[in-house]
Length: 428
Ligand SMILES: Nc1nc2c(c(=O)[nH]1)N(C=O)[C@@H](CNc1ccc(C(=O)N[C@@H](CCC(=O)O)C(=O)O)cc1)CN2
Ligand SMILES: Nc1nc2c(ncn2[C@@H]2O[C@H](COP(=O)(O)OP(=O)(O)OP(=O)(O)O)[C@@H](O)[C@H]2O)c(=O)[nH]1
Ligand SMILES: [Mg+2]
Image (cartoon, rainbow, N blue to C red; front, side, top):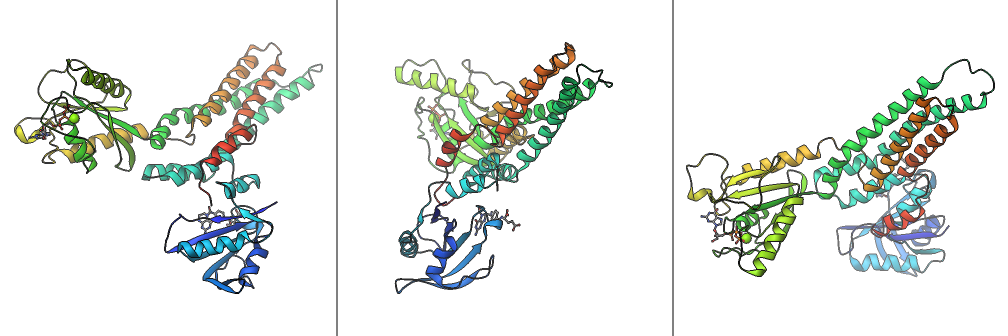
């Protein structure tokens, strides 16, 4: 096994930079730089010297393979965060035999290969690194903690018990099996099905947290949509003007709203337009607004026929400053009036949609759960039919177990790994 190293902290200058080395030659490589290593898992201040040159005075931290993140001997150098310091240490490591620079995600890949984490945890880690909002951070941490694997394992145990019961029936088919195992088998299948269905129900919510929530601002031309977007975004993301028909393209602004990732969309004002380009913009506005998770209708008092509010869409009165006495929620992008309430209303709806997020957070997980559920339904009907088709039922149970195994990467995921790890940073 090769020994790998990389800068684990962000590139560029920083207060402290961490260079990580993992593999059988890690301790030897560290000794070549610092002489005596500190006690395992105790940071020690050491002078890093390479070819007579002092590279840095840094903290050195060693982990033995039995108790490290990667499952291999690991050394960390906590260096002064100058780019020149990091470069010098990387050079000194590169010069050593059996050492090479790590590829993206390679430390985590080794953790996976050494059984330190399962595939779902790797995905949780990938999400954690990308997390920008509180909801994303919490969700990723939940997955990273290994709860997907734990739950999959409990389902697996039940299905294996069900298989064993069926196998007993098959093996003793000639003799009289004294007890009817079917009720127990069906109960086990039902329990697992219930658990899987609950996870499936939470998927939409988890996806909202992960991918974010789209809110389209719609209304007639000149209602003040772009001004509202700019006020919410806190910057001039969209052009505003007194001319009706200013906005044509859909303008997207990503923001953190009440701890959730929200993408606000500013759209072209809706009307029967003469202008060809404007009408293309209007078509786009309608198409995007229709697939958004939520629409905020900015009502300027005029009739809007091209799109109507549905579900729990929000309708607010535009240019509140000009209509101080109107009832209902009114906002003004110019004065900021009503913005806080609008943000709270949007936040409430996002929170509602994100509630009940479970453990499965990716399409890959969803597909595996759907496969498992399908197999369990077939197994169930084989057992219920009582046609003596226990072999078929057992085969379906096995395929359900395989689907669950793919959740945590126990089976057929080789080609997935490259794709997942290629999106990791180097040093992770
Ligand atoms: N300096 C530093 N900080 C870090 C990491 C790191 O690698 N280095 N991590 C890297 O991502 C994260 C922490 N993750 C870790 C996960 C497992 C082990 C570990 O040594 N596990 C052993 C022993 C567990 C124990 O001591 O209780 C094990 O699982 O056997 C270490 C770090 C975040 N902070
Ligand atoms: N008094 C007042 N004027 C506003 C408000 N919001 C926008 N305006 C003005 O109304 C005009 C149109 O604003 P925009 O934000 O460009 O309107 P829009 O809805 O994006 O218009 P289109 O892009 O053409 O659909 C500009 O002159 C703004 O300054 C508001 O809350 N109060
Ligand atoms: Mg506009």
